Image 1: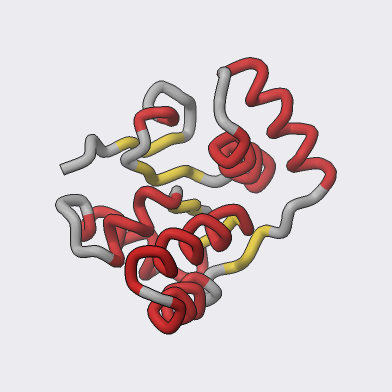
Image 2 (image 1 turned 135 degrees about the vertical axis):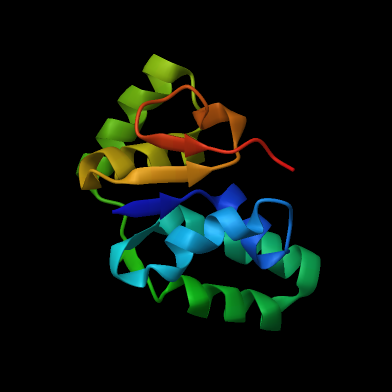
Length: 124
């Protein structure tokens, strides 16, 4: 299973340097998990940059994967991760979701760089 961090979604939808790398897990919809926090971040980012109509299109694409709702188990795991790794809330929720789902995280966000089960690609 794969989770693409918000930074990967942004690269993909904006045709940034790593777009082709993130296309691989994003096109494998059978194995794509989408934490609800990524929906929030992508909607907000896209609406601010490109407007509501484009934000709705992005979310429709994201919903082709399996949405991971925020559960009590994920919240508690994320709180521990935040303390242990000094991570921000959104990043810790994404990482906790991946841990619980036994998924790889694909990202270009340096906050994940040294963590296990992370495919990190420096931003181009």
